[in-house]
Length: 258
Ligand code: NDP
Image (cartoon, rainbow, N blue to C red):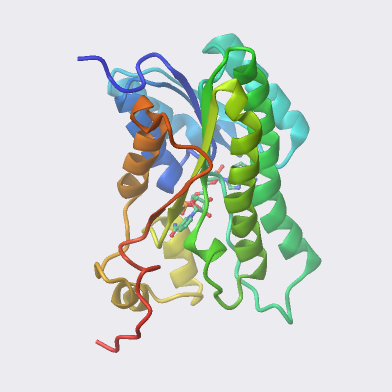
């Protein structure tokens, strides 16, 4: 049986852990050859080893995605080693909650640069390669916080709302080149990011579980499977769309105390 993404070259940013690691493993199991980006090459070596151990092909790349020079070099390296990119997943992101009255300019810049400017830089680099080949696929990772207001998350919410809308602009500009652009919008997913926020007293996992109709946080695999579908030819007529994967969080407007 041929796999859905057989032989395609995929780039996953923020692939060293959490959701990005799950996406890289899922795309590799669908037959893609995966370039795993992290801030430092060494951070992506575990996921590359795991893909190779599964019989797949992968490459670790150090690239701070908010830096245009590093993005240009990284995309050139992927093209030289694996070939031009067919699929880009813009997953790298940060979340550093801070109440707006105390928030610093640095906090704003960090969210906008890592979560949002990176999507522009990486998508442009990918689309320039895809345009000449008449096709490609870009999947952005947004957040329910791009649609719902939460306290102490001004920079994060703004950056993720921008990702949602950037998806639509890129989709309508690049449809003529055969490039599809979609956004996966996760609810709360149990990763190191969430565990660290709980350790810092910035959120309470039990409260999040209670607020979610399915009464659990999502897993990286829940998001990775949605990415795999959107990136496959089965979703060939789908572009400029956002798919919410949140266990019912966004649909639910009531407060439940138990
Ligand atoms: P993690 O903190 O677990 O992982 C973040 C990843 O991003 C790491 O691979 C990290 O690489 C990389 N990264 C961070 N900063 C940069 C940078 N400047 N340049 C390149 N790579 C960078 O996050 P999650 O897996 O939880 O989240 C992944 C994405 O999903 C993010 O965009 C997040 O906003 C989004 N999301 C997460 C939700 C959740 O509940 N977890 C909910 C909704 C959306 P390194 O190891 O090198 O630091």
